[in-house]
Length: 127
Image (tube, rainbow, N blue to C red):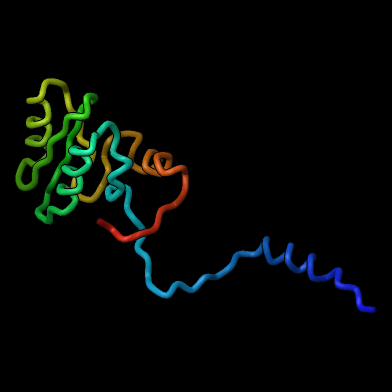
């Protein structure tokens, strides 16, 4: 009678080794700027506005928001100052969240989007 003690041992060792998975279709890593759900304080309309901001191809582009969740974006010359001015016209001081393809709001550049998604790396197609 042959002992089968090596099968559980091999299973444990295999679980510790990195595996290579071959995907049938390529996946794109989302950039922090693409994570609409990670933008703080926005309601559903704000998230839709941020989605429109992401689709704009004109550069520079800028998205600003305030502590009430009010927001504005602009593209073209003076995009940053015009986005802040339009946002502040709603009553409170505003801050840039994103400029072009980068999150510029302090503390949200990398960590906050990952925390907002449970600390996991995210894969998927850009919006």
